[in-house]
Length: 125
Image 1 (cartoon, rainbow, N blue to C red):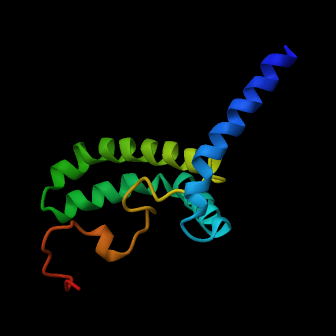
Image 2 (image 1 turned 180 degrees about the vertical axis):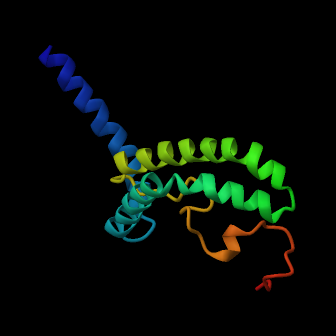
């Protein structure tokens, strides 16, 4: 039993050495780890807002029937996805990584919130 535990720790240490150095080279390790942890907590806490966000997009698209019948289920799907990704980012915060979801947060800026098509309400940079 002791040998199995020792070999498991050895494998974990080798995997840690494989993945972490590439993450350390991309800026400050502690800053990126903290950002990942905060992103994960934010995604778990604010994930129910995805339902409202999905319904709001349906109303903006001049399809109120869709906003009432279809978009709540789409929002639930995105809520579950955001909870899972947020949980993953909380558990693995010690390995810095770029955001998995786009937008990274539920309450994103207006440029990320609107569709990426040419929208006359925003100016392109």
